[in-house]
Image (tube, rainbow over all chains, first blue to last red):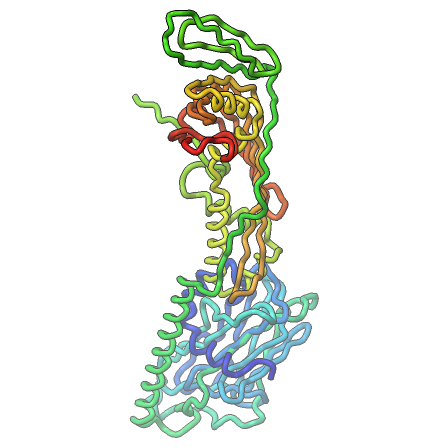
Length: 319
Length: 203
C-alpha cells in the first residue's frame, strides 16, 4: 500500500483534536473539506444493517488524486474488503481504489476525482451494531490532492444506537458472527461521469485490534468494560496531546520564516521642474565699523543683486 | 467646536495605506491577490492551515517594515543632490557665520526601491515576494535656511507625494498626499548637504 498505516492510525487518533485547527485553516488548506452523512442515522443495539455513507465535496475546488478515509468505531463489525458481514464497497465514475487496512478498521478510498458539489457513497454492509446504546462516531478524513495532508472533516457521521427491546444489551445482541474473510466493502460514487479522477477520501475504523463487539463475540464481561474504558482514556489522552502539539505549532510556526531584504541601493534623482529659478539671499553679519558695507560677491553664474547696507550685509543671488 | 486635522503621513507606508495598524492586513490581501497562483500561494497551501496563515501574516508584517520609508529622509537625500542647495552650502561654508535663505526652484525628487522577502520553510527558500516602491516628491515654494554648509531651517514649502507600490511587478496601489514641509523634517543642529570631507573637523 502506498500510504503507511501509521499515518492513517494517527489520523484516526487525532481526528477530534484536529477539528479546531482544521476550522482555522479552512481557507488556506484545501484538505479536510466536504461533508459526510450516514443513513440510516439510527439502529438498535445489536442490529445487523447496511449503512450508507455519503460524502459531498462542498468546496469550490475539485478533488484530484486525494483520499477519503472512514474509521469504524469499536463495537461494530470490522470492515472487510470482501462480500459478507462488514463488507465495504465503493463505486466511482472514473475509478477509485477501496482498501481496508489490515491492522486498523479504516477504509481508504483513494485516487478519487470528484468535482465541486458532487460526491459518492460508501456502503458498509451487514454491519452489526454494538450491543449497548450510545453514539458511534465514524471518523472521516479527507485530503484533496495526492500531496495533501489527511485532515479530519469538520463533522464526522454519527450513528445512534438505541437500546434493544429484547433482553439486556450485553447479552441479546443478534449480530452476525465474526466477519468472514470473504466479506466485501463497496462504495458508489455519485459524481458525474465527466468528473476527473484523482481525489480520494479516507474512511478509517477504530483502532487496531479492537475487541469483538457484543453482537459478534462473546457476552461483555466486566474486564472487557474496563479494557474499553482504558482504551477510551488512552485515546482521549492522545487526542489531548496531539491538540496541544498542534496548537503550539500554530502559535509558534518556528519552521516558517520570512526574511526581509532591502534589495539594491535606492536610486534618488532630483530634477528642476519649476520655471522660477532659485533665489538665494545671503546674510553676513559684520562687526559695526560705522561705515556702509558693500556685499558684492558673485556667487552664481547668473544675476547677482548686490545691495549696499549697513551691517549685517544682505546679498541676493539668482541662480 | 474643534476641527480634527487628518494625520499627515510621514512615511511611504502611511501614504499608501493611511494611518493606523491596517497596513499589514491590507498588504496581506494584496499579496494574496497578486500571488494567488504563485510560489508563495503554493508554499503556504502546503503548510498546516494555521501555519500557512501565520506565514502569510509574517510576510505582510515584514513587508510593512520594508515600506516604512521616512519621507524626510527621501527629501534630504534629494536636496543633497540639488546643485543650488549644494552651492548655497559651499558659500556659507566659505563664509563662516553667514546664512542664506534659499527659495529653491520647484523640483521633483524621485526614489525607487526594490526590496524583497524570502520565505523559508525549514531553512529552504520556498518563495520570494518582490516589491517595487516608487516615490515622487514634487517640492514647491521651499524656503530653506542654509548655514555652515548645513540645512538649518525650513521656513516654508509644500510637497506633493505620489507613492506607488508594485508586488511581483504588478502595480497594486498608488496614493497621493500633500505635506506642509515646516515641521516635517527634524533638523537638529543642521543637516549636512555636502560630503563629509568638505567640512572642517570642528563642524
